[in-house]
Figure 1: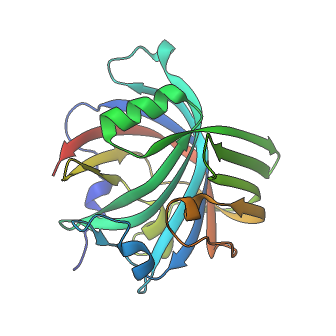
Figure 2: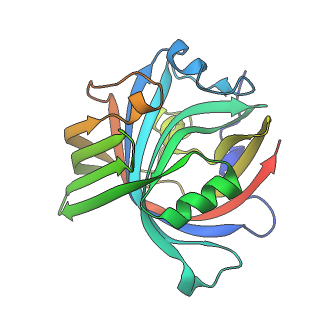
Length: 239
C-alpha cells in the first residue's frame, strides 16, 4: 500500500482542542522484527515498516504551556514526558502507536488517560543541560520501567525531506489509541522539526522490557535531537 505521508502534515480545518510546546526532544530508535511488535499492536492497525523492519522509538522531552483551548494560559502545565512508540497506519493514514508514556505531572497523566485513552504513567523525572550535553532520567512510580540517558547534541540537519528515513521517523502527525474496541485518532499540527544529529554517551533502560518488547540493551541505530516545535492538538475522534 502506498501511504500519503504529506496529507497528515497539513493543518485540519476548524478550531484546535488545545496547544502545547514541545522542547528539547531526543529521538532514540532501534529496529526489531515485525513479529516482535505485531502482538502488542491492535489488529486493526497495520505496522508501518522501513525496509522490512519495525522501529521502536523512545522520545524524552519537555512539555511546556500544555492546555486545552478553554483553559486560560496562566493555568497551563509544564512537565517532563517520555514516550515509547512504534509506527503504524490505519486506513491508509500513517501515525504512531504508543506502548507507554511517562509524565512527571500526575494531573497530566489522569487527563490523558481519561480524555485520550493513552497508557500514561506517573514517573519521577529530571533533566539537566550543560551546553551541548544533556542528562535525562525517568523512573516509573511503583514499577521497574526506567530510562536514563546521557547524550550530546550534534550538528544541525534542518527539516527532513519527504521520502527520507528521517522524515519517516520524525514527521508523524497522527496518533492512534484503542478504546472499547474502537480505534481513536488524534492529530497534531506543527512546523517540521529542525533536526540535529545526536550522540549517546550512556543509555540504560528497562522501558522496552516493561512494555513486553525486547529488552534492547544494544546501542540504538539512529538518534536525532530537536530544539522543539509549537503544537496544535486536534481530536480525539473515533475512526
